[in-house]
Picture 1 (spheres, one colour):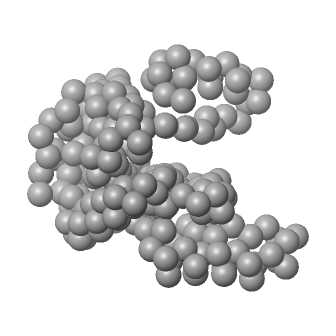
Picture 2 (spheres, rainbow, N blue to C red):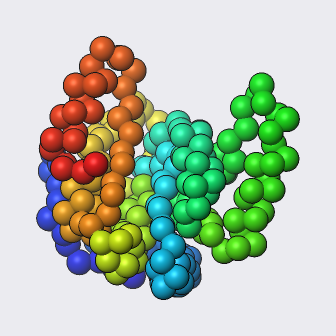
Length: 219
């Protein structure tokens, strides 16, 4: 499955080009059906729905992937966020990196594992949590757009071959486009969107976070 081009871009790399030139995940249609049914079911009964994305993505360096660039993210913030929303009665779409944290248990608080597991089981039994996993950045883009489109329908309430090993590798990278722009202005404009700003320099964190709020106009 291919996608039409959408003109959101950063430094020459467009979101539309990424979606157009990448194939959808092999289980994309199954996941889209699950997302649609999940959103329709909970919207019908007035249930609040939240989408939580968690974990990093890989960027393959070849079409027939042998090497890739990875984003090291354990998914702890996402797992903590999902737990919080479940505790407060939300239906949760938990879109996470395959094999990253799904349940957050701190090393010094193993005694709380049993109630957390019980809470997750109750949420699963009650159909209040839907797990959707991804690995590559293109998989993430496809699935995130599908999830946003399903939520939007709820209304305001809610190289081909292996790289050669000989010689010095010459890899040219481009920045992946920010997804906040299409999420806020196109895919699900009525949603309450929250983003996290990751910085290693604490002195610029607040300034960068405020700049992001002003630029993308989300919450």
